Length: 326
Ligand code: UT7
Image (cartoon, rainbow, N blue to C red; front, side, top):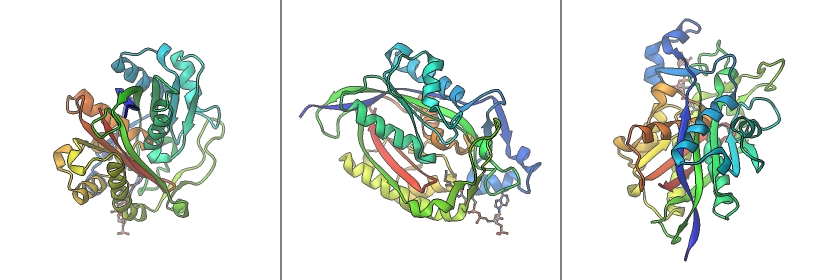
């Protein structure tokens, strides 16, 4: 049976220039490079400039993704931005990206599922593309998480960084089986009874500044992470009619190296198949998966035909996974 699938045809990424190291943080809070590296794997993070906004990072990543896909702004007919840190409460960051890139009118909106935002956004876009409703969709994860940090709280301020990643999705015909190119299966979840484990404690904006700050019961989130992520992966892989052995590249949300290792070990994923950028990017929330993806495409690891598995867990709690053949 011939079916339409959503194929990833270009990947882009952008990191703001400013870098903050663990030693820089140790001058602000009671922490150390040794503790942060041992407990999280993070060595540095990029920090958005004062004159930059989330939409600027998003637009840069999107430009590269379009270029890699051999497309121009004129081709784009759907924009979805996954972000927890929109430029403003409204309009959606996707609207601002549309204007910045000179894209013609068409659907553009944001998805808010915190660190799982990119997995959610990709799945939503699959609904458009695989039904023939979009021919060139831009899916962007973009975050300015450092603007939500309380730099007196060492349990959270060491974890996050800023950046953006983007993919282009285009329709491609398939046979309806697991040899098809494109998104083959996904699983999305939310448990709203656990909102208090990870949230922002106030309004997002005020006089150009963000008011609320990230609050997290880190060890509680950690406890849920490996178990819930593994379940979502198993479900996504099953829906794709694949097995864990079929996965060429595991591109997890870059929250903590210990979580990445825990999931890989539990599922029997070999270490060399795990794409990890957590040391250099830290946790960029919805941007972390496409940024890691971009890194591994650009350095030549990920190639056409490979099967990629993405997963994330974040505030909500939300979590999810998707299996994609390139
Ligand atoms: O992307 C969204 C999802 N988020 C996550 O997945 C994050 C999940 N959680 C984590 O990554 C980890 O829980 C953290 C890295 C946040 C913390 O690591 P942990 O091993 O769970 O440490 P903990 O919170 O249980 O704290 C252990 C100790 C405490 O001291 P005491 O009470 O044992 O004396 C903390 O006060 O480590 C202390 N501590 C620190 N020490 C130095 C906490 N943060 C720091 C720090 N530097 N930055």
